[in-house]
Amino acid sequence: MFNLGWGALFVLVTYGFFLLCYRLFGKKGLYAWIGVATVIANIQVTKTIDIMGIVLTLGNTMYVSMYLTSDLLNEKYGPGEARKAVWFGFFTLIMTTVLMQMVLFFEPASTDFAQDSMKTLFGMLPRLALGSLSAYFISQFLDVRLYTWLRKVAPGRNQLWIRTNGSSIISSFVDTLVFCTIAFAFIYSWDVWLEIFLTTYVIKFVLTAVGTPFLYAARSFKFKDEA
Image (cartoon, rainbow, N blue to C red; front, side, top):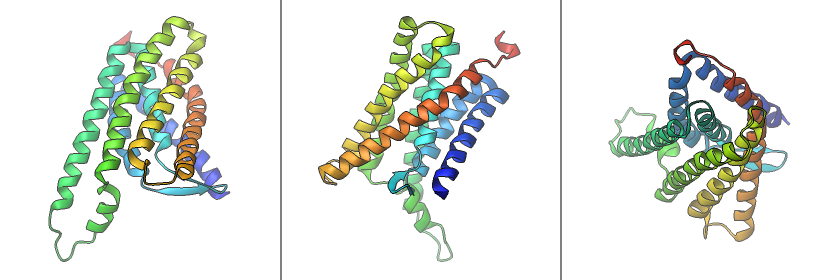
């Protein structure tokens, strides 16, 4: 039960930092959040935890926060800014992957203690790296397109929850499907693959709903230079 309570606190703290980043730095803070979140999410995903008998990977909260960020950019600044943020996150993810793979190729000194740990965190198999990059690229641009369409269908200010949940839930499904297929297909049995896929998607579904009030709060922020 500890992981359940600690996980709830972890979600609140993550979304709290998301709000603080936007409150302190405005639109630039949202771009910064995208860049940081892409890196942190791919580090967190290397750790697995057990919650009520279900084994999960970390990183989902941070990943869902990227959907909230692109939705907020789309809501307040338009789809062009949201797409620019997706490209920035994609660049950050590629840059981090390439640079850290190069770092691992350096021969460590005899006194080095970090090489093995860094291999664990950053020594992703090419298949996992391809899965992560492909899932991010496809799902994030899909989210921007879906949100823009839903803004026409449900344009009301009080319909933000429809726009963000509708776009994120579909995008998360595609993201999970693409990643699990590239990373885990033909490695695990069908039953195990399906369990990984369903549990990951359900967690993202719940996290999207939990993040909606934070998105409403962020939308209400006013900045002098944007007046």
